[in-house]
Picture 1: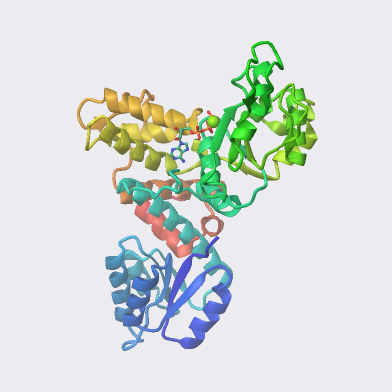
Picture 2 (picture 1 turned 45 degrees about the horizontal axis):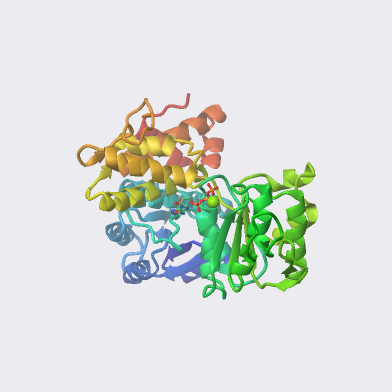
Amino acid sequence: MTKPTLLIVDDDEDIRVQMKWALAGDYEVVMAGDRPAAIAAFTAERPVVTLLDLGLPPSPNDPDEGLAVLSGLLVLDRLAKVIVVSGQGDKQNALRAVGAGAYDFLCKPVDADELSRVLRRCVYVAELEREYRAMQEGARPEPFEEMLGVSPQMQAVFAFVRKVATTSAPVLILGENGTGKEMVAQALHRRSGLRGGPFVPINCGAIPENLLESELFGHEKGSFTGAHVQRKGLIETASGGTLFLDEIGELSAPLQVKLLRFLQEKTFQRVGGRQEIQSDTRVIAATNANLKESVASGKFREDLYFRLAVLVVTLPALRERGGDVGLVAKEFLRRYGAQHVKTGLAFAPDALRALNLHAWPGNIRELQNRVQRAVIMAEGKRVTAKDLELADAAGAAPPKTLKEAREHVERELVQDALRRHAGKITSAALELGISRPTLYELMEKLGIGRE
Ligand SMILES: Nc1ncnc2c1ncn2[C@@H]1O[C@H](COP(=O)(O)OP(=O)(O)OP(=O)(O)O)[C@@H](O)[C@H]1O
Ligand SMILES: [Mg+2]
């Protein structure tokens, strides 16, 4: 994980260095001592959070220069997260700064625990806002090997693919239906040294057992009724490339033995044959079943499991991918729109809400199908929940602006925390990761009482 970047603006070198020491473990720290340096550093580094001392040269005794930095940063990025650090007895100015758009304020001397808590919370909020903004602005996500996804869960999958693609060890891909297991297998193949060779997929669950053996290992002429000619199996076909064994959990016990032998020795025999045949095929397996359970119940050989599961990646279900649902849906809408010569389509608010509330048992494939059908069904430019055949969530109107969305979330969080702490401001603020005065401010702004 890369550390979030933090900008410290303070004219006191001692304080800058002190803060840097305290925070360098968790943040990439950048520092500036005056307004021009702060603006330059912000532009160059795009910090997630800025800690801003209000008293800056040339007028260290009044807050004007600090407030000017604040408004400058907010012009550069209206969602910039600035935490103001003010001197003792300077609360009035700190409140002014919050009124002008600062995220929070802290009083000197800054308590290290409170600082780290406020910062963590602030980074979290910034992250949520970034995702929300990307969705609102319809940013087009950059695909990785044709796979879409900006959630940390999918970034972890992409990182796995980058890392292991070039090894020859078997990979086991786990995940529900339609989560992209085959796409990951193809990505691994394309990024491996075998990319010049074939990628051969086979669904072990879709082929009758008696045919599967000869499909995989081939057969000699006359080895069984109907075997009129010698035939190569897919393991041979995939030589110099990748064999993708889908639904590996469906493999019968005898075939499990034969596959295990191939993985251990890199040789096998055709059905009805005596000759040992060599193949350097790389094996990638996938399943949506719980293989460990199959091992425990004796349905799947443990030794084969360990051979296949040298490297394991579990694909997250779509409902676990946070903001990905909206982003991916929009990209599919654009693609299918172009395909069906219906450009300029957009989701209606009820559709976006329904997309985010649906549980997606069929994952990306289901999303693809629903969007494709909706493109065909939609009348006009608006794709509705009904076009997607999703139930619209009855209830409160959705927030329309970022400000409304933020206030909505803030209200829920604050009310929740106050309820849990029976109206005790100090402990509620502690849980929320904000300072006490900020909690008072928030309560006033949102019209929330202690009860
Ligand atoms: N991250 C993604 N971005 C874009 N499209 C995706 C993504 N993941 C999957 N898809 C698409 O979703 C569909 C299902 O993907 P895939 O066949 O790889 O899933 P699977 O896990 O193998 O499914 P099953 O378990 O049903 O075999 C495909 O059309 C694929 O192109
Ligand atoms: Mg599949």
